[in-house]
Length: 102
Image (cartoon, rainbow, N blue to C red; front, top):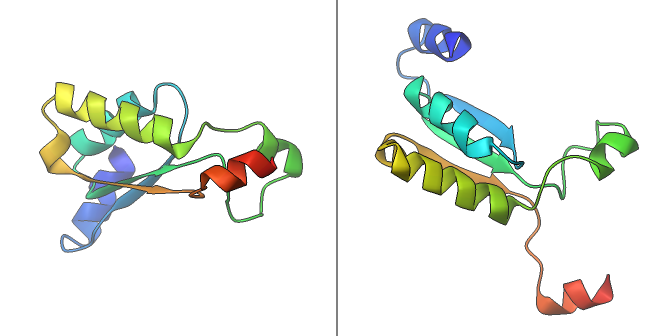
């Protein structure tokens, strides 16, 4: 929250975006981000990424973005914060055919 506050003070017109990993409890963290007056929270799924992380970290981190999005939205709505922040996701979209291939 302090970093978000400092960034807003440095440039009051800047859009502050915070990227969170989709995992249990991501909604609670997103609520704190909204209370700190960030503009966007991005829920990152377990697929994809920059490739900068060790392979062991990539394979054992996060949940599908759909689960993180659902938890984030529900938590923000329950706390009256949903209208304060834009919620985005990243990660892969898969068709039924792609699921069958794996």
